[in-house]
Length: 406
Image (cartoon, rainbow, N blue to C red; front, side, top):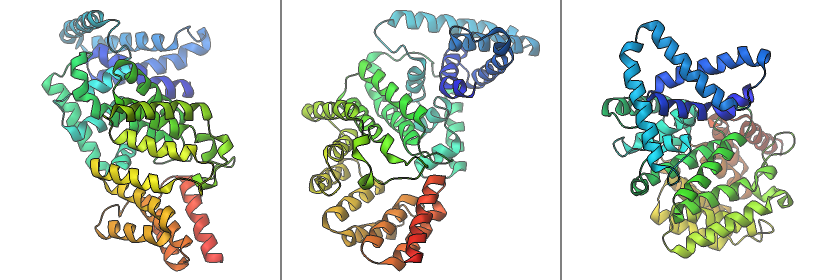
């Protein structure tokens, strides 16, 4: 049941939101359905289509609850009308538009009427099931601030009567940026979880890739290809990123024979298609960088000059302190660790990324390689204080132990 909840709960929730047009009712219905499954399935057996059973049960459970509360008389006509509206809307667009409720709901939460800095967090919380803390970590802001954004987004949907309906094809492009950002954040949370005992959450990376494939079928935009390529190329290295005992393995130390060549070939082909379009953006550039890593037999033989060039282009079209940090690391690999440390010190000196663990761990690693152990030790200790994931804590503690013992 735990596995089923992890893999199906958000899909069940998405469909119930579409049917009930209410986040709270849908959440109650989903929980009631899973509770009923825990009680019923051990006696009667698992149904042939568990997801359909959960959706049907949830819907009837919430209707029963409303009847008991005396609210059904007021709400039932409205709910019935919503069901009819959704059915008519979907029938009219059958075969030509989105058929996946979860993807449909992502587009709904990314409606232009919702503030742009609320769209993605709202979608991650309500559609993808990430906790407020996980989302806050991805956005590098406080949990309290993120909670306020999510509440504001739900209130906007309710007050503005934003429809839970399939957007028309001509509406899709204006919502694409937020949707791509959402899908990529879901992937990132699975690729490098923000907390917990495990570095990787395969359920989230698989779901993000599935959603990107659906998006590509719907809208063959170059940046959709770029995003899918980026995720496939990252995913290709999953088996080499962690040792059998759960220790993090840096890319330069990974066994490259474990990299998935089929995913690399698919990702590389998509990158080339996107680049040829000359209408690519930040995702395609990041995918191109990842493709260079994937094609390199060793870290030493990597074309770091080309990677630095691509990061420079990325910094121009989509500037951010994190891109600047990654470019600094690439420069360090090309020109030596001191060159990278100088750039990172400028970033931190501005006050950017002060609470970002990877800025301090990257600085520590470069200082270690530059033969500056005392400064490296201090940087690793700051990174350790900021780290929340157990494998990262073990990695940083190991670096500190090595420097202390040497």
